[in-house]
Length: 536
Image (cartoon, rainbow, N blue to C red; front, side, top):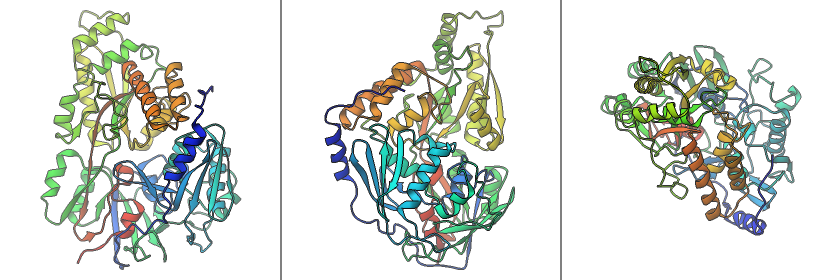
């Protein structure tokens, strides 16, 4: 793939970025008051698909494996990266990045975590092409090397202004001494059948029963939480068929936390419910639809535009989201990223008549009933109660424009499989965290991108994304990304519908939860659960 030329000042800019990286060791961020003998029970609506954290592709995968396998960096409520097991990070030059690892961390079997574990993980995921978002971040990685016990340096194939922070946040670290003997990291199940699990988190898996529970026990020493010892003696994820059943289980005391975000209609009800607490988490992601351009009809810009103008976005946010969501103005860059957000981008107007004109412009003629000779299948997760509701509104809006949309709700893991296989015309879902526009665009819209669900390959868009990836000057990078965003908007390569803060429910018998952005982190992130203690 061709890359844009790097500006002359690139090296100096990269070195300037290095100087801005945090230099102080990360202090324990939790507020835990010490260990208890209590079990913290958490509800989820899906099973674990992959215990191997480099392969995880469901929320439950992430929730469970994040409690065992650490990330180099974390994220604050505004999307900015912050230290986790890496205390410093940055660039040596335009094609060399680095991380400085916190000293004194050990795996649950007592072996120390070193830079070798980090370097081996990065190289193994790249070498074995382990499918998933982590691998998608490693396109520009040549090789990672442990230059000391605490320092990893990454040689890049070409300049990349995003890769250090993005790998740091999205990637995980696994124990080399456990994973390497198993062969390919892409095929190691890590399901505990050969002696259990070895991790470096506040908890480690002990046993599970598919469709029932996933039980983790606390480790003796977790220096990333105040006090050094996790609060709960055990954390148990219990599997329920849907969010409504989870709510009943929480109200009855069967579970203490619901991992899934609450449906908007339940937020106010649960805020006033005795014995419960509702905790807000910032939303850095969005709900969207993508149109699979492998379908010849959807390859036509006018058809995608027609579908975009057939959605009543205001009604969806008002009726389904109960006013708890805001418009992104159909922008794939979130308003919270104020430096990048382009206020000239406007939301697609709900106008079925305009949709009909666009269909006619694309060469279609409606029959006597007003229907055009096209039919599209929209897939969504049955476990996503919000999307399940607005999917019907999308179908109804399209019908008013003479376009037939069939709905196909599927159990979440089936839905994920269909998504990966491209077995859909319209994909409806959520992007959990929009933390870096250039990286997110590369994953979403470049050919071969890990989440390029539109299957788009637009040379002009590709060139802009590629330029942004190697542009260290912030002002220039913002300008490039705004141009790329306009193409995505005008060509409807992504139909971004809204962004929202999320709400999570827990029993008031527990305290100390620490909220982080998105449903992926929320109040079930490792530091939050390690900090949780019985109230009173």
